[in-house]
Length: 118
Image (tube, rainbow, N blue to C red; front, side, top):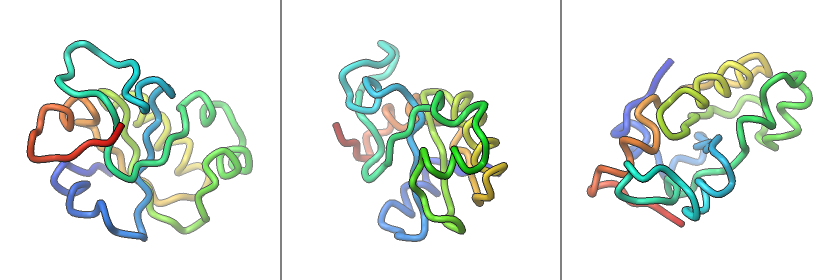
């Protein structure tokens, strides 16, 4: 299951959705990133858990790493949708209802109509 940028933007203030950034801590903080992106930072309100904390883990370990309550809807993103797709699979295996945002930060950073946080 996937979400578009517009679908994510429409739910920024939705308390039933957790936006999960699975990039590195530096990417999330806006201190590091890809030079192809016009802006650095993260989607407003996004929670950060690096993909490495989710892959190869048991469902209990994934739930502990995210701290997200069971039954919560989650949308994952990274830079270009690859890491977030892997994270989405780990989260699904842990029992979450998960969407992947394949455009991820690469798309979001280009859209001047979408806000960002650092």
